[in-house]
Length: 100
Image 1 (cartoon, helix red, strand yellow):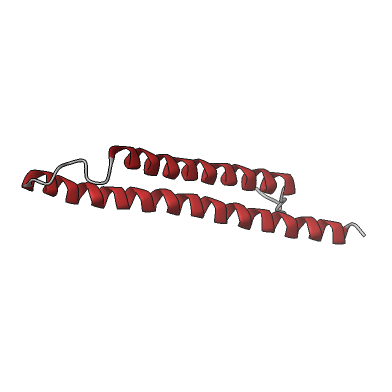
Image 2: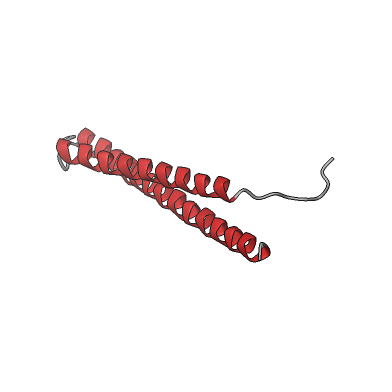
């Protein structure tokens, strides 16, 4: 059973922030690679016949969804990293103030 005390590791918060930043960077790289690969195949590689157009309509929806998901994941990780870093700074300041 816990004694009710909670210990916060400033170093742990900072490391978590760095890990989240790195993860966000990976999603950003994935988004850039996704866009680059799509650019290589061209704007409408599926043709202009009815079947190609049906495929293209679905492919465009999937592209947009994938692009949004990758960017949202990147931004979410970066935002969380900033929040963890802010929390770490606040705890560090509290520790500094308490040690005076």
